[in-house]
Image (cartoon, rainbow, N blue to C red; front, side, top):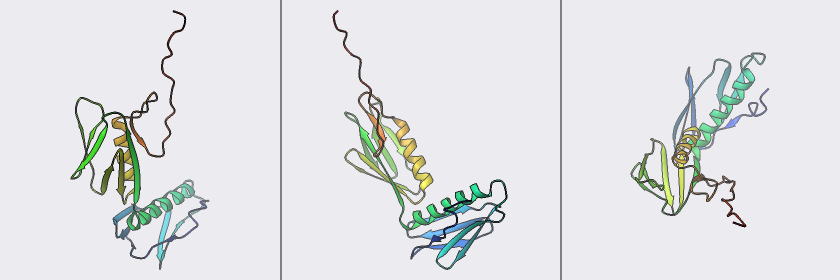
Amino acid sequence: MSRLGKLPIKIPAGTSAALTDKEIIVKGPKGEQKVALNSLISIKVEGEDIVVAPFDRAAKNASAMWGLIWSLVRNAVIGVSVGFTKKLEINGVGYRAAVSGNKLNMSLGFSHPIEFPLPAGVTAVVEGNAITLASASKGQLGEVAAQIRKLRKPEPYKGKGVKYSDEIIRRKAGKAATKGK
C-alpha cells in the first residue's frame, strides 16, 4: 500500500488540472505537463485536490503504480507552478560555459568547443563556473543535466570536469615519488 499515494495532491492557486481518457493535463504559469494514466489507477480532481487511488488493491502491480502515478502527478503540479532547478559546476583551468540563444557553448579542455543544444522547455543561466538549469519537467531537467555532465565527467585526481553542485568527488592520491633511488 502506498503511504504517499493516500495523500491528496493540493492544486496551488493559478494552476488547473483536467482529466481526459488517457492522461491528466496540468496547466500553470510555468507551462503545461501531461501525465499518462495507468489502467490500474483511478484519478479524480475534487475541487483543489487531486486524489489518486488504485481500482483493485489486490492487483499485482497496483501498489507500485499507485505510488508512481501519484509522484508523477505531484511533480507535474510542482513543475508548472514553481518549476525545478538543477545546478552544475565546471572545475578546471580554461573550462568555461556561455549561453547563446538556446545553445550552451562550453570549453571543456578538448581541442574544440562543445555546442550543446538545449531542448524546448529547458533554460540555462551561467554565472561564473556554475550552470543553473531550469524546467517545468523534472524528468527532462534531470536527463539534460546528466547529458551535460557526461560531456566531461569529473576525474578523481584534480576534480576537473562537470559535476552537480551537491556532488562529492572522492579524491585519489597521485603517484608517489619513489624513495631511496
